[in-house]
Image 1 (tube, rainbow, N blue to C red):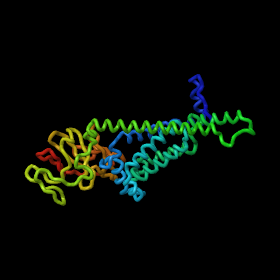
Image 2: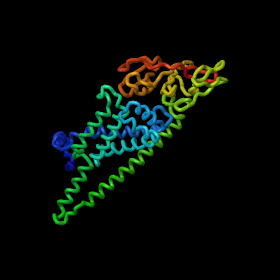
Image 3: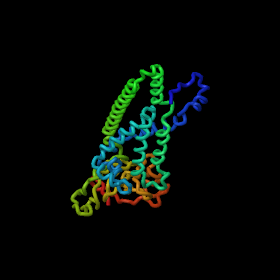
Image 4: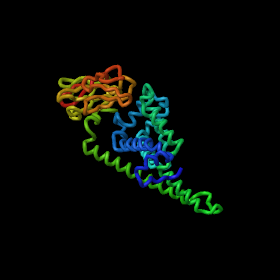
Length: 354
């Protein structure tokens, strides 16, 4: 594998690409590299991903996957350090993506990509039916092309190998060192440079994400968690009393469990909360109208997300679409609508789920 510079005449590029070893994996490397870098930056820029109380975060995802994953027993201990696991995954994706894009230690990067893809397949994608609807199993096998064949000539690895070969040819046979120190130093230098860049770039992305989140009051209503969200205990409103099954309110206080203030849900938006141990959404179609639905897809149990622009719920696993106004299925494969949860607003502006 040697580095091959492109010809000066661009009209000769098609033939040069066809004749240059490794050109067939260029598009694959670009797609896999960009995808993993973007996936990493999305995690680092989203504070909710690392927040234990957020139903869209890494901890909630791991708890959900624990119920159906074949390695669910291994997820139990990891849930206690979910934030650390999330950080490791984000930076691992960044390292894999950068290594693949540059073609530097490409086989090692591709091997890391295979491990991450397999881990995702055995957890969040395991319930995808049929299996080919899930992207992670496809990513796993796509990485094998680079693991087996290498990154090709258009890579830092090929350039380093060319430099090493030229240096060895210029050295008398009897004086060739057992270990090429210059090549080793180059690799160490590039590795250190990429590691520093990844750490600084990832840290800056995370800082900007937190800054944007804080400046917007913790996120928009479509992604914010109500005050009575995950982990919150039943509380009373007004002069109501709290019982084992929720709150029995007095005049002006609805029955049920207080989940947070109505002001957290602007008109046309939604906010997640937890009701009886199930992740749910409260949606506010109009000023005085609130509707609630379970977030558990009726197809395979994935967690649906609210799409503000269309006022719909979208299942990220298989693409089922539900109406955010009625919970009805707009597009399958989901067989049933989302279970409804009654939402009422008290005179003090608090929302109650029943």
